[in-house]
Amino acid sequence: MRDLTYREAVREALGEELRRDKSVFLLGEDIAEYSGAYKVTQGLLEEFGRERIRNTNLAESAIAGAALGAALVGTRPVAEIMYIDFSLLALDQIFNQIAKFRYMTGGMVKVPLVIRTQGGGGKAAGLHHSQSLEALYTHIPGLIVVMPSTPYDAKGLLKSSIRDDNPVIFIEHKGLYNESGPVPEEEYMIPLGKAEVKRQGKDITAVAYSKSLLLTLKAAETLEKYGISLEVIDPRTLKPLDQDTILNSVEKTSRLMIVHEACKTGGFGAEIAAIVAEKGIDYLDAPIKRVAALDSPIPFNPRLEDYVLPNENDIIKGAFELTGKEIPAELKLG
View (cartoon, one colour):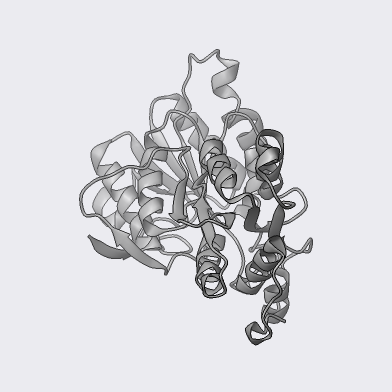
């Protein structure tokens, strides 16, 4: 077991799948010589050539449409759309064609494609490069939505996504690329639709994904010192969602907190809350708590951005509120 960054883990997954299956190829803006906006595809052009590492025009709808056409004739394209914000320019292709094509043909045609994209804030990149829009994609039948939080998960889930016969929206948080973690040298895959309990606990179930998972795990360490035990669950795949793992945890803890970086209103946390309310309301001893971004565009100013996005202190406050305990003055949560 060696440590890789999130960036390296994604790159390694791409390289392994390109070597394994000649029908796999990459396309996207500046992914060849420039290696993509976050250097994820560095070195792949030199190994696999221009036929399989393809630069595209700056046209997101064309990228999605080309990926669909390629998937329909038997290849497995992995398309990169630089920033999830710009994927909005391709929504007709993604929502009305890619997501629906297998259904429209009665299952006669498969659509094995992956769209990799970057979401999230924290980089002072402004309101057009910092959004968390995963809930849009979970709303559309026919799409699988994956949001890995660790290098290990990023590699295993990307390999599974590329081999799946259905379209996958694979969302990487730009603030995770430099995060390191253990990744096995031998090949492995992580099944889509399977959550993982990242930390065992007994007082509160905390469901968090992507970069918010790291904040939640840090908050859990602090809370443990004050007698509050968080059980932290990473869904990893938002759609299909592993409901059983979440419900089993809530049955044990009787309290639920959901943490994500997207705006609270209409965020994916609302779906998780609704599922628990429908299927596990009798488990709960307190109202469900959502910790999320303010309902605001993401500001360019770093201090304002920090104010809008959820942080570790917000998670700690939410946990104290759920348990009814008074926040110790020395925590200075603001």
